Length: 317
Image 1 (cartoon, rainbow, N blue to C red):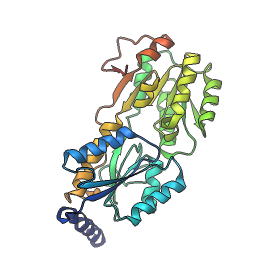
Image 2: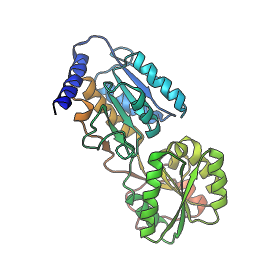
Image 3: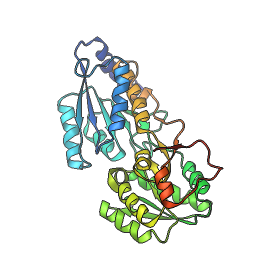
């Protein structure tokens, strides 16, 4: 308990220093592979709290392009420049930021689907370390319910994710289990590259009633666009886990809004930078109510009609 108290006191001393210093704070932003709406949401919360870019806050924006070695270099750069806080996106990216950053540097994350299961934090209620943030997790029953509502006769689906990525592997395994309970056979499609995604989608299109995407970096980094292209040719519906995926042409989805999550993470960062809290004293969060989105053009192209049982949804076009 004494050690924990000392660690907590150390954080408090560090964070209180932000209040007494007239120097602008420095925030490192590590996006891993993109997500501009998340960054915009994060910055907007800091701006609303009085942090003016290039005046009272300086941002070091870095994009590793999903490259592990580049992410390590980014973490080392942030360490050398002694940033006051890091905003880190995705599970893969944040695992490396945590590993290569000092444990005294506050890290606020987002676009991390399973932050506790992936080992980034102990739990949503208490991180037990210098991390806290927001998850783009949508309770998986939402996907099952939505698919059963829109495609009540579906018997076989294919779930696409990046091979070896922790959060999407967990998501896929749990989805397979839940779909099995309602009589739907879900195929685990682990892909390595964008070409791999497209090749496997073409092969499976005639065998399944729908494609399903996960919230991983391959799907959000072009994989879903490949599925959409196959979907248009084969008239295969797509149940998406990503807002941008539905905007780009996936048929429908139960999704988190990355801009909203970015704002929520930004609010946590404000408390930390103002010295009002330490990461371990804040709770990590998910979006309270996921969005149900439908792409009208894709729906018409495939020839689907939404059932009257589907409520509280929005068209993206």
